[in-house]
Image 1 (tube, rainbow, N blue to C red):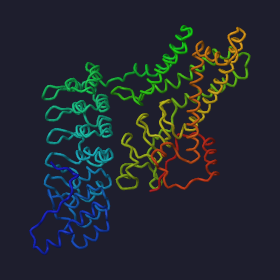
Image 2 (image 1 turned 60 degrees about the vertical axis):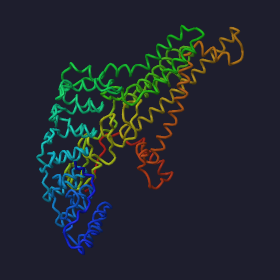
Image 3 (image 1 turned 180 degrees about the vertical axis):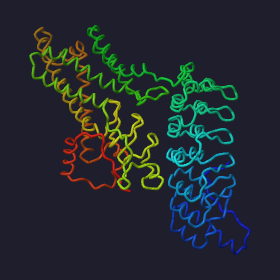
Image 4 (image 1 turned 90 degrees about the vertical axis):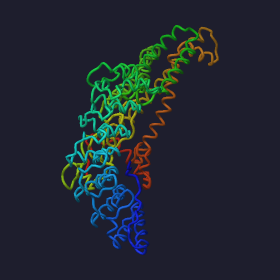
Length: 577
């Protein structure tokens, strides 16, 4: 079997010993120049002997095969201009274009097709350019071949496998999503042994692949059997691993369903509301524990903390939905503090109209910001990058002709996006000026809501200060009442009594205190990034290396402009080709 990663090895030819001594170093030097991406050295070698481009080495590989595999457009262009054959076959009937598709550089493939490379040739295994692109998992290459050639995405090789089979086998999830989108490839197609892509995904235990295939082809895929009579369910049941047994339990519930499966909505709602109702039950139960209420609450909240720390950013289901447990924890804590503040502390501290008014205004602002941050648009980039030169959005042709780098092509939206746009796999949207994805809001923090995020943190911090202050005021009133009852003068006994008799308030006070410290650190980090003109994402990716440090005046101006500029999700995207 041939692999495109094989290196070119010169093959001796029947020439005189003197000529062989002179020719062999040139061959080796050319291959080394290709590996080092040295254009100038390649030109020097070709000036001495252009016939070297027609010479074949091990497995009949030509220098153009090696150049295409390297993905260097300048070297490929040089070789073709000097007479290299773009349709030369190696021992496995693979062409340089096949290798270029495997490498995944669209500009190289585009240039070769323009200069005579035949995209419809197949190798001995029946694989065309689409199959080689699928081996690499390059969505940009698959999209280019679909857009500019008449190649059929469902064409099988001699084993009956199409590019969807290959994408699953090679674990290329973006390619799978691309092919499953709009039913570009039928997921129910079988190879010569009756195997579907779902059989492969179940055998390998790829949960996210399985869910994508089921959403594209319906639950009927679970009933398709291969030549051995095994369905995907049978494979999961017979494979003796813990992961496959869990997988069998997850997909067996869809065995009798038809159409695309529905997600675990009840699990999602449970995770969302668990923290609030758990804390409610704990606090209500502690009221009937008499002197043990504080100990009971401490143990139960330790369990809640352990459960929260064990949560991941996605739920434990093959659908891999974003986990709402963190949203429930954050919102549930705010709701409990609000109920305790307005329903317990303020009535006990009355009269305090000014404190109630200020807290009500802050709470209203916080609720508005919270709703906006959870349900609002963080700055989704719905348009392709705009080219000023041609007065139109950028397309795949611009990428193929080198007017925009391939890194700007998004394999999920199939568009060329702006340089400051980043695709979030949790939100499944490209967003502009991404700072981070906030698990506690289940939304991205980006160009359209970044300042709202910081304002929410500041508003919540003010509410937490208010809660802690009013809690200590309430504690002072209780101290006086207990002192009048003759229960002691030192402060410590009152604190212990407070802990035992009112665990609801004492634990919410502790929660507000530590949350205030964490949010203060987060605000400091966010404002530091704003003043430096960067984001958390750029800092983590170390994209600001080598930049000149800003002056203090410029940093203050950045902070001022950040808060006064209008919120506009439609940030203009311009590029001059």
